[in-house]
Image (cartoon, rainbow, N blue to C red; front, side):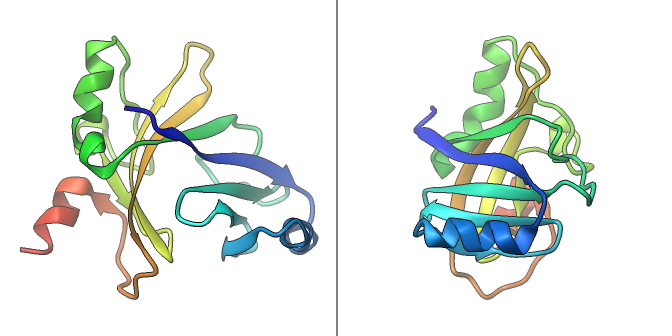
Length: 152
């Protein structure tokens, strides 16, 4: 199921200087805003989330420990059952109940299918599957089921 680490998150005190720092390391900005920005570690495969410590943005305030495991898009469809077989419950995320997950995030320029759960210490974990890179279409967050049905 798990193919690798897709994302990790760090709190930052100055978004602009942090983005500049990571660009000096050769990382490309994937998404930039004043609250949260992402830089590609390996484009389309892994990125680093930078969260402004002064701008609370739930559910990923910098005080929350969060990582995301990369899974393939075809595996995320079965991921909820896979977790259930192991006694792991999916948690609510972004207002989506476990029943409505996986969900699709419009993380322009990439769309991602995601499923959220916790480890025994309450650390926030996620299965994430890249769906499309460099798309133009704008859309609201939705369930994966709605994502596939909208194309019909």
